[in-house]
Length: 373
Image 1 (cartoon, rainbow, N blue to C red):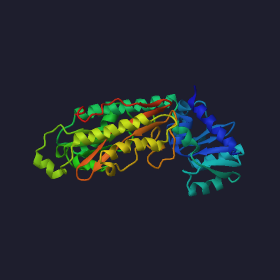
Image 2 (image 1 turned 90 degrees about the vertical axis):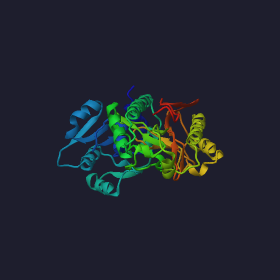
Image 3 (image 1 turned 120 degrees about the horizontal axis):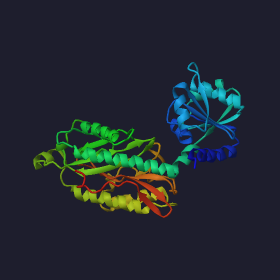
Image 4 (image 1 turned 60 degrees about the vertical axis):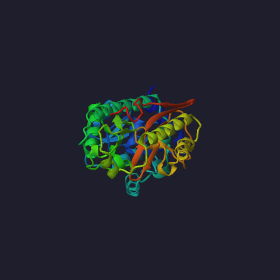
């Protein structure tokens, strides 16, 4: 099955419904989704009879390898991509042209008035993103492959930890191990937080060493062939820390193992709620209830999760105010957390496939606090 042709045909149905002659795709990740082209600086023009990639000579060979079924318009070096796309639209005689309203800047819209003067631009919102939210079989396999890369990287990361390594050292190590594990790069700058700094959900790395805290939060992901993974584990430090030193750097009165167990139960409750037809906010509510009932509701300060695929954050939104409904084929993160200022934080995150009869956890890493180190 040619998944790219299937995606374009699905988009064409919307194009006909909106009485558009053509659709102009300028968002790079959406170009990739519809064509398979992994390069940049390129646009895609879709009509009922044509599928044209507008690119430049740097990518000529790559286009032939990645998109053999497409028509290609290679612009000369003295013309811009918008100028070349305007030429294509003019040649096609496209009068009503749908453009991505969420990505088309005012400057680019003004340029097309010059480059395609006979075309009228019509804003289209979320058409490609709606298709991307439902992963086909090839995409699920691609996400699973990115997860396997992230898991291999984490095993290597844990095996090389040293007590004097700083958060910055460990971030660099995660990035290195993702590539050594076969990934293209990390899905986002890894978050590595020692001790009380785990109370910052997106803690920027510092020079704080591993032996200056009783726990370690690691949030990382891998990119492989364009698709992404996103995982988080919170581990107890393997290094002995004198009580006086720990008390000096981290607030006392909270039990790490107990809080970790609450977060794990919250994640389990959310995963059990996942299935086709369930409002995304209900999945958030299932996790939030466990944490609230345990007395830590005020310390769960973000939404439960998000869709993942060609981008780390995409539809659907899994949070309290989400209006999305889960559909079979979506892949979402489930990442509850408890963040206590001055003490630290615990977050556990996995990637979950939505199915008709329930959620399937795609990641295989142990979720307990002791296994990792």
